[in-house]
Length: 294
Image (cartoon, rainbow, N blue to C red; front, top):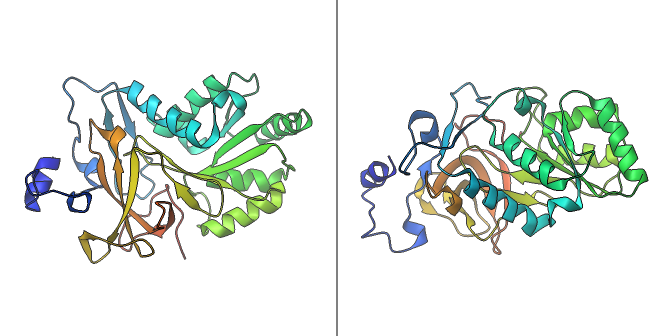
């Protein structure tokens, strides 16, 4: 599929002599085609939520061990070993279906944390509040990783004062709540939890690596993942840092599917390689993985 796509753009290994000339496969191809380059059957097929009503992406994963190595190295790079934390997953919309790469990742992190209180929470918010209060009392470092709408619901019902807990949002509203810009979400969560910053995870079904933000919505990537921003009116032209456009991603962990992905997300690239996710491109499907800009 990627070979045919590249050929349609008159790009081939002979004339691609720089990163800027690499063709980035539109992420929508994962809905319409089997993007798979390995020999043999995949070990897992991850699927998207399909919240935009435009179909479900399917990512055929040849090696789960490669996925584990990617997300564990990435997590350790930014947060250290999972065993440092009690890890709490508030991911109701993901837990209610099968095939979520995010649930797989968080489940592995929970197992590696080895803390007796680590685990998933569906709608048992009162229990989650009790666990957080207990962890705070014991000065136990914790990571509360939740889908955005569920974190907002929980924060409104149980405004627990957090001092030793990292709050990390991902996944957007999934159609459950009115869309808010990221700053509004973070302002609410910071106020309700008495914290200074909300962390974020940026990932998607079609990628096997993740970027992380420790606050202010500025994301960093692991060394095997790189972000570019393309011209919205000329997708083959990449913009300089400081310009706003569509987010293109190189993810070398995608070696058996496609490492070069053109997303529908609108972003701003900074000179040092960090980036911001500003919303969705015009005409792009509104999906759960990032917040809209209104």
